[in-house]
Length: 371
Length: 215
Image (cartoon, rainbow over all chains, first blue to last red; front, side):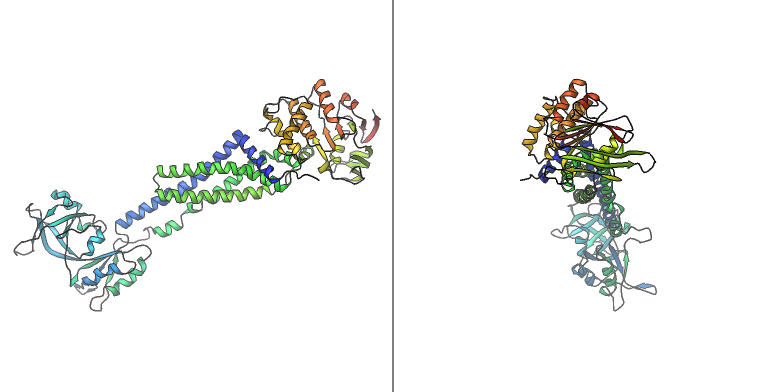
């Protein structure tokens, strides 16, 4: 009975042995895989993280906030219905909303006479909108500028003395707990002011509405009707002015060039493997001369590739994640994108290894023919 | 395995010089034959035609087994080239094992054959030497051991002892030619001492078998 020559298991072992004994060749190939797996994912993770940071800064500055006011009629501007504004928080796609009423009153902390600041009445939704926790007895929303000027601190319980624009009798409030808030999302005009949660039952000057990227268009379209005053539609104004130079972050994410960087990475790995095989074509010729058929040869090459790519991919993944984190990428993006690019690069390169392995091989006799 | 050539002629396409003109020979199974001749006499061309490296233009070269059936040279012959062709990162034993694998040997059997044939060419104890550190002569002997380990019935060799001293050359020829009838061996050589070891000598001159001598 004739014996089977070059069974696939033997061919695979030869491939592994070639990788194991390849010394500099194997080391350089594994290092190439390492860097080619690491670099694209790390670069993309850093790029996406920066995009996310920029978007977050933009959102924090009011990127998805609408300031809704009533329509202007002649010299007067219609108000907006405060209860309707407050109720918007329950509308799908709206994260938070509150009504704001400007007052002509000023206030001071009772223990710091003088230094009057502007007071704004806001509906209860402002706490959620600005991320302030409620407190027993009520809260006073104070900006960083106010706290800096007065020396008051978050959590202090204070009373404020409220004075109207005319010579009315000052009113001292019940004790209120100070909540420090960042009002940058509302605009610079509130820096140094106090926002006083109040029960606004009638109308208000404006309504602040926070939405998100997925709902911004629908919310903008719905707000005129939702906040109409006496049948007259309200006007939603984006808190941040948009221009041709405004970055569309969703578009920027989906169309980033680095998203496809695994394609040239794959091609580069395939090219390196092709060069390696070309320089070592005499090795393949030796096996072909001694009866190794194309199927077994492919398995042998895959065995070698599997070892080199396996080590390289693991090292590359680790290097990519650590490198991306070191260069400021977010952990989630580093893990996700280094894995994404690494997996696609290795799969793509393996496909190229298979394609290259299917090419006909020369034999030692061809070497004789070349003489 | 018998090698038979009838009326073999060959002219290289880019020249009008006829390298081989009506060559005919018969190398019986289990014998050794040396092909000799001056440079340009057509030795390598004849070997290339025997190995189907060059397309036949006229004539026939056939490999015929004991039952009279024509066999493929690719499955029946091992080659030893003048240029050394080893896997440089592997050991001498690994290189010889490649020949054994072509005969369907298991790993253990291939290891045994590697030891046996390396010893036969005078390289006992060099099994674990990396092919990279072998001298030219040692590497040539490893290539010969690899061909022997394949246990194919035909060995075609192009100047196999070109890099060996006389004593080592004799050892290698002992191993390669072996006992009479063991295998068919065709050796292209310039060395009369090598030719003297063969059963037949085919002297090529001006594209024809000038002389056929039976040792």
